[in-house]
Length: 257
Image (cartoon, rainbow, N blue to C red):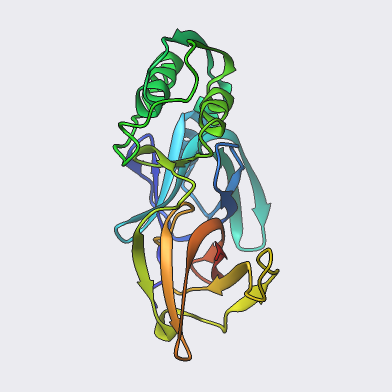
């Protein structure tokens, strides 16, 4: 396994010798923070990171996390210097304030798109299968406050959930999404852990997976073949602890079955 992370500050790649990324991402729009650690970052790159507005961390072709930088600090350690940057995916949408109304009969997709446009964050709405679904209310709707909360509030009426990824925002319907990821025993670094019980059933409600690959996101539907059984569910949470050297390389997924 190649342990390598690429760091981009406002789209410009930084010279990284040793790095670590840690954080937890869930379905929904709350901007949970990620922590990026960089050892012996050159002075000019540290100043660039301190002034940057956004940062993204990639592994190969996968964008692991990207968001607004909220804090950068540096300290001396036995290995030289350690720079720590805290950034939050979705912070711009959380901080943006909107005030708008949509007429009766507006589709779910057009309502979410209108909120995103009013937020002026530039976050695009990703096409989905909900484009023709209309709210059950026959009255117009008004939205005021944090853009992220307005999106979540609009979707609660139709039991949908929003997921924000680096490429934009999409909706997960209550029935879930088609399976887009197929996993086998070879993709796991440890045995699955099953927890909880579905209402009125003896089947587990959740499954915790430790996987070697890192290109997974909350909201994706996965299918796992394990010891002759097939388990299908939705990624509800992802936790990363990735060190390019001298530490763990952990990617855990919480799956709702």
